[in-house]
Image 1 (cartoon, rainbow, N blue to C red):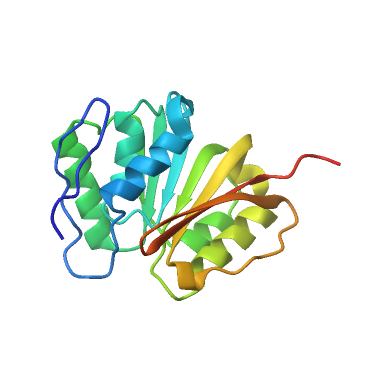
Image 2 (image 1 turned 45 degrees about the horizontal axis):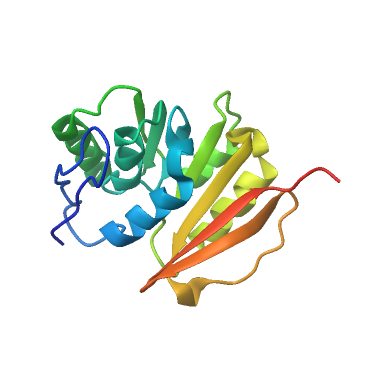
Length: 188
């Protein structure tokens, strides 16, 4: 799949390499641009956890637009290698952490780093996005107080889920991609 690129910011226009094989589904430029239009200037000086990072496209876009830290997580060595190449090629390899790790095992662990944004774009049709949300809901130390959790799924995967702490506050559909937005519920 060609045409994956950085849309705005310091690395605007840089092309990104795709992960070899067909195990990842990169976010389209249109969807990524819409996502970052929604986030807006709040991305500046924020922290982002790019789960199931794949090419690293979302985290790299965040860095290009001024995020202060991005943690890229993927269990595929091919994906990790692609993220490293894309970070190097864009010159955005500062203020990053790259972790070859199973996302679910990671989210079960304690963390000292809370994130402002957590982007979940797992392989489709396996309910992995729901599993990720349940883990974040039960381990909220991963989330800063006003964090957003954003899941990228195919629209047919969608189902409303009851969570204790997280609440869905928006969803946007772009072709065959649905973005779901969650945040912590206000204390009663």
